[in-house]
Length: 465
Image (cartoon, rainbow, N blue to C red):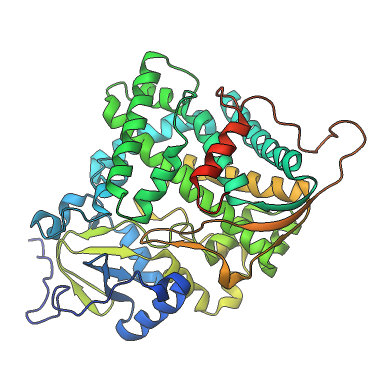
């Protein structure tokens, strides 16, 4: 039997280039992205044409269509070379988001090449995945210890009661400390790296240069660990695939650093935010000791990646109310999909423990975060959130919800800062009681003083002073 030819878009059907598109990133989107998604859905249906910094793309809004795009790798490709506008030279040379897509890394590979790269990641992450292995146990203990050190430093500097920014003074330093340990970074790795990851994802005018600097820093790390192997992720990746060049390994580390610092950090802050704002279902999960469930609920309400990386149509296909042409770029919106999901008879979806796992915070399909990475990320988020409520007797936001400063970029929607009025729990008798945060030592395992690290991050981060 002859194979049936694929369908092609009917003559005269609307093309992306023929449709009037309005910019997605507006002041309205900064304030109320959910309202923008709802307006686009009313006008266009499950898929809408939008402009991202002057470049037209399809924004996928409804949960069913988003999951279809994420899971059908045969139709929806990740390799930027499938993008027709790029191949035809239609993208502005200085388009801010292009630099990130040009990084040749596992996220942007397809087929056998992608599967081989994922196997390398699984092998390298496996020693850290299991909390009963020496590497896994030590990493989990280190995350809790770093959290305690940062809370103790806050108490030493500001007292047992006062004001703090849980972004600049806790979450972001914590994730950088975890990164330096997991990756086996030497002490001189610049704290500026975290800001470069931000600049890349936010798509500002310095995104291209920031991407190049961050990738170069990780390439230097790869060369360092090739010469001096250790008990770290970088060394295990070289062990899993000795043929990796320093440049290629640097690119892999670069994207892992993006997820570990920025995306996981957003998940920590978003979970803390939902608890502090008084979200009843999130609080009930936390009070019941179900940290993982609290994280799932927060990710469903406010996913750490609002609009996911582009997929490119391998051939013409009908999606929503439009025909998508081969080579068109689509951006699956997890934030819009979650709103759609919660609107579907939300009582049984949101209240069910199983249903909250339907969130797309870790992606879906063949390109979702590897299982080992998801487990590690979940462990880090749960530990970071749990230690706050282990040591804080009280924490209240000092800004109303509509005044919190958000990074409303094309990819992430994360808090720039989370200011709170806090009170630490009283310590039992003795210099530092059991279960209380211990006074910070001189370093966090990589030779870098905690105080110096925190001071550097405060200088770098807006609102962190």
